[in-house]
Amino acid sequence: MDEVRLLIKRFNPQVDKKPRFQEFTVPFKESMTVLDAILHVRDYVDHSVGARFSCRMASCGSCGMKINDRPRLACYTRVEELKSDTVKVEPMDNFPVIKDLATDLDGFFAKHKEIVPRMVRADLQELDNPTSDYLVKPKEMEEILQFTYCIKCGLCTSSCPTVATDSLYPGPQALAQAYRYVMDVRDEGAEERFKLLDTQHGIWRCHYAGSCSAVCPKGVDPALGIQLLKRHVMSAKPPRRAGEGAKVDLKGNKEPS
Amino acid sequence: MRESRLMQLQYATAIAAVVLVALHLLMQGVLFPYSMALSFQHVLSIYRSWIDGSMLEILLIVVVAHGFNGLRIILLELRQSRAWSSWVNAGTLLAVGLALLYGTRTVLLAVTGAVG
Image (cartoon, rainbow over all chains, first blue to last red; front, side, top):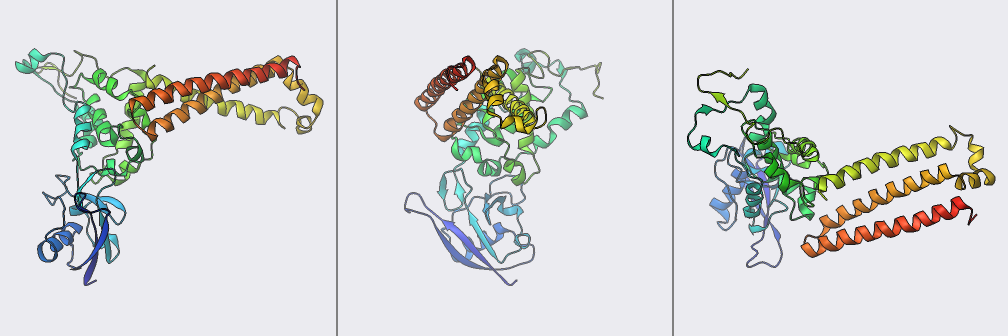
């Protein structure tokens, strides 16, 4: 393969009435990523192509887009692995388009914030003036570890069929993060999150399509987290209540095993 | 009512419906000979039995609750607004009530021998 046929979906909502595909030819290089191909077009052919990127190493989650009909990170997708000399790139579904391949993630981050993605503790005094450490046992960390890998790229949300129809649904990213914090032994805010999730447009609107897990570039399984969280929400029994979170004496009376 | 309670109801009615339909199929050939299912007198006796009538009533409640709650969920996912949610929830309750009333009337008419 000497050249790649790159089809970019162009749409500027402020100017265009409807989106259109524009074709570019990009010289192929070994190990070239889809982001490299897009940047080649931006640098040498058409500066007006809109795309978001940053780290180029699948850490920042900025370059999420639909590549050959599947949500992927452009920096983490090599052209060779697509097994086609035609690469079709489109903005992620379920997100408003800012321009071309760049989508508006404000609503996505707002839903992430809604589920209180931080440690909630009853002892605020202890947080300000700590007298001990909050330790997590390796087994306890195993339960949540994969969910801490989330880079908030939005690919899971773009592939979710429920998000496509229910604008109030938190989405797989927010729900998986809710599970991550509910199951963290240092956290005591599960009841607060359950009130947010046990609603008409909350966690129960997940029908376990599993597409979120299939497209996650970091190997996170949001669908699993959501199903496990449903069990806790159904019983309305949080793993811990206020004051029951992990705590260990500074002298080390309780050691993680 | 908490949404999780409604989902519990949804799961429980799904299992109950499968059990009742399985029982129904078992009665057509396994528990009773299949020829009895084709006998007018036998079928009439089933409709006039209070035990079978009770099973029909339970099946009615289970299927109506499961079906209309499922429809409510689909409609809630279709559009999102406070007014739409209120209409859907109220409409579901009304539909469940009407279906149960009409269905119970039918079961009672059969059991008491008013029809058939």
